[in-house]
Amino acid sequence: MDTINLGDVEITRVVEWQGPIAPMPVLFPDLDQHPWRTDDRLTPHFWNPVTDDYLAAVQTWVLRSEGRVILVDTGVGNHKERPYMPPWRHRDEDFLGRLAAAGVRPEDVDLVVNTHIHADHVGWNTRLVDRAWVPTFPNATYLIARPDFEYWNPRHDIPKHGSVNGINSRLANGNTFEDSIDPVHEAGQTLLWEGRTHRIDGHLSLELAPGHTPGSAIVRLESGTDRAFFVGDVVHTPAQFAYPGCDTCLSENQAEAAKSRMRVLAEAADTNALVIPAHFPGAGAAEIKRAGNAFEVHRWAPFTSSASPFVDVSTSRG
Image 1 (tube, helix red, strand yellow):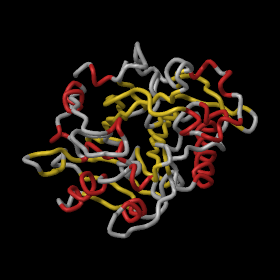
Image 2 (cartoon, one colour; image 1 turned 90 degrees about the vertical axis):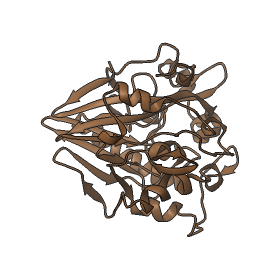
Image 3 (cartoon, helix red, strand yellow; image 1 turned 45 degrees about the horizontal axis):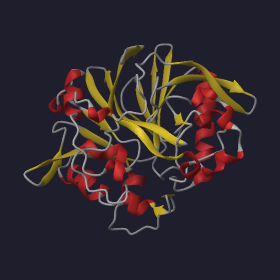
């Protein structure tokens, strides 16, 4: 199934895209120092052993909480110019059709949460109408951490430190601020939250987990006895459960990202919270438990796993 309930919050998974991104050693260079390749739990959904590619999903989590519709991350988007990221360039998806199948029209969305500003997390913030980028969700407030807003704002020209395939993260995320952040900010629809935490409602809150980007955040769900952490890119692959100190080359501060990951995973293991990363294909989320100084999957969430994890879901509309 693609919808589950935790306490009084309903969670629906809407997948925009899935497929290979890049070889594992490119994205996770430190992981090559560890024997993760012998762990068959990464196949078939998270790693292709034939090509050595990291497999990912780009997806939005739809939360229905206290009468509001909330989106956690908005994927890649359509018609975006991403010259240094071919998988994200000029896509033409029926993502809004998939949202509609989940019972959500653009005007129904009350709140959009961007866990951080990267091209694959903010793309559907906007859509192209008459050659202009306009907010996709006209009635929504867009929650963005101020540290990320300031860091990625090209007017500030702050040096960037992440990279992929030798391409600096400033180039990899080129045009993202201009086409996916500026239009909603200029429309007066952003709320730039500050501080360590931000309360969304009685069940949901935001908490900084910096490192991947300065304003990277997790969404904490606490409803009744149920717990879940929407961790964005704090975790990219299940291999990081076993080796939480290993980070991706995409991060702006790898040491800080590893520290945030260890803290979040430790709390998740100790409180039985469901860990919901932005990019997990397959079951999409997991409960974890401690395993020495690291962690392992206790059980997977019951979200639908793709029958063919190597196929881009965009080839099947709706």
